[in-house]
Image 1 (cartoon, rainbow, N blue to C red):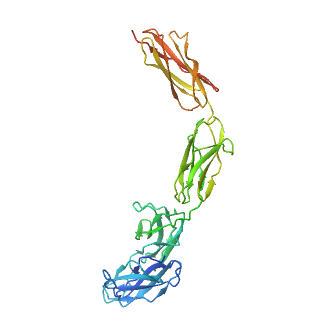
Image 2: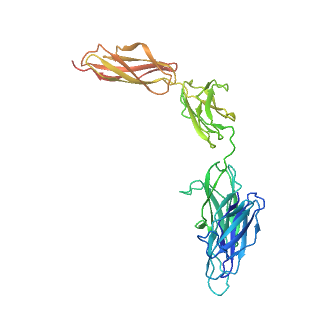
Length: 413
């Protein structure tokens, strides 16, 4: 598409001005452009120009075009425009305005720093050539930088060019913006000045990166997190490639990947999508292999193999208390952390700390988790208004743990 950036005028005298703009034909053969300037442009369907330039050839690359407007009336406001002519018809840019200096003398007048509206050419899915016309206004040592980003509200720019020296005459500043996100609207503007604290910003403009052709997904296996003796959270990213895509994790103790998570639909975007999967029932102290896979109508892609090791098993951790205490009965309560292994447990209670009664018989079991689990047991045949001690005993393949005794007193009759 032919693109024309907003013009500005420089080197303005009472009767002359240099008109400037940027234009690209985007490979449309036979494109040319010309300037026209007007005394009264607004609101007219077909305004008559006060003057115009000759035809200027336009090539495929962004270029600076200028012309000398002469025979102007001193102290007068002019509007002007650049029109690019292609076989399909003209493309006119927004009109711009300048005022000639008043007075009979023809002394050269240096204008202030001027920055034209940016535009982007050669736009692909992740790159663009960003361009703008700039004039330092005679401020020696000036530089300019092009900025681009996706947030118009805060102008938190995601990229910028290096410093581009700016001379005393109008010039075209360009740079290659890379690493862009496909199918995304970007805001771009140019800043020029002798230092960071004295910058002139041009108006903002927008361009939209191209959508790449749909294709197979792009898959990256991430590093697992939240690893315990028996559980882990698998992570990764999938770029669906613009096609409806499903993903799942494969895992196991070898690269044969004997287990997998369920398949989930993650849409048809062109950008990486974060994905996670919760897995459990793992063996403590064991190295596992995992990889993320995704498939769409263009094919199935699997990410790299990643390994992680579950936490080692440990002896159970236990606590015990007595609750719901009545004259002759009570409900004992406690917690057991199995330490990653199947764990058996029982309560013991005693009125003299010498003779302990175990319940239940045989032992109950929990596990093989790695988080505390609440356990309870009812007991009867107690003596009213009597002090009792209770403790919780748990055992697994890593050892046996007994909680400190907790005291409770039965209620009176």
